[in-house]
Image (cartoon, rainbow, N blue to C red; front, side):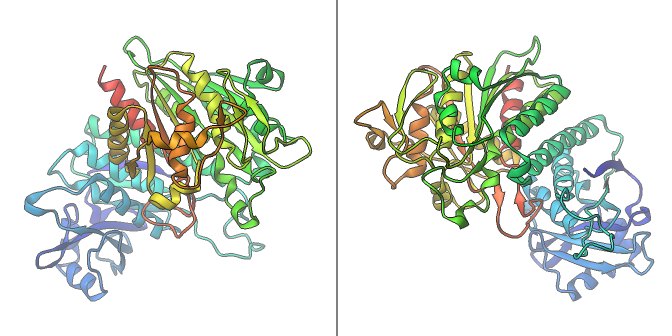
Length: 512
């Protein structure tokens, strides 16, 4: 991950490879945003005319490059658009700043050191501004290069630009302790997101359930989190029939990882986190079409998000207790795989008739949710790349949030918005529940095609203990960006849900 530092020095004299300033669309045309004053002076008021001449409009995330020709120490200046100028002296939304910083840093890949002036606006919550710009810049400086020939290697068939290695935020009060704390928090978040992106991008041949469990053990333990891993006979003895059933078709056996973080004497809330960890999803005997398997390495995005969030919560010393139960399996077709019409018995004693082996995520989550409820948490949150119906309903960038508690659902959606992860509240219509009725077991694992995202939520709800507040996040689209990179989001793994979970945990810790 890129390094990040703060400075109050004149940005026009910063010893960097490139300098980033913000521009916006004002009532009378293009305007410079706060922080760029000394740069404009150095260019003898020619900056705005030059940018306008190059076609800059101030549109959000628009990138315009300009050679400074010695007017500043940095040879290159990049103007990034922030959209419309806020009305009546208002402020930019944190996500606007986050995306602008990310877009600028992505565009400057190949530069060693970059300075950004976007955090110099002193008109509102300085900590929020600095944190947003720091997060965006760090997240924009990401690249997954594990399987690529090193840049500059003559044997490499592709010329690549390495991400920016050093980031400098320019602001008037660089020594302010609160601002430095905001940057430190942003670094923790960025590391957590990068971990999830790396895991999601890793080929399934190198990330079997045992591998993912060991990575979870390593990262959690290094953060001071207690770790337990269940496998083999322990899963059978523990009654985890859904997880065992899904995993039995693969030569790579399933795992159930338990992470436990204690928030100290100030912690008054216990939260259980559950994340779907299907390291590869072929669909099982209900085999997916070939094209539908191409991105199924991302089907463990929920598990990765929980691992990273728990470790980050410990690193931030949040005053909340967290118990995470993370089921991991590989869904493969074989002679030992579960069949349509098989009946599985789950941790809480319920039975499920499997009518579609490609609806396996809810089977492993059900066991983990049931086990999580045994710890008597105040809240259970689960996250999963669960249904294609989520993509149909909300697209590739918006997380669906379902819950048995309206206030909790609203709180999660609000936290996700502040964290920069778009989400939308979805219902759990009781009339859809009858579609899960089975003639031979307590439940079917899938209902009618209509409302498939919602029936998946209703299925999971059956495994939540009475009186436990629960919310389910479907990140089938947001977990993996199949399109071009944008803002601070790369193509591939996005790290979805980590920031939402951390914001929820922070909210709970501060409300004690």
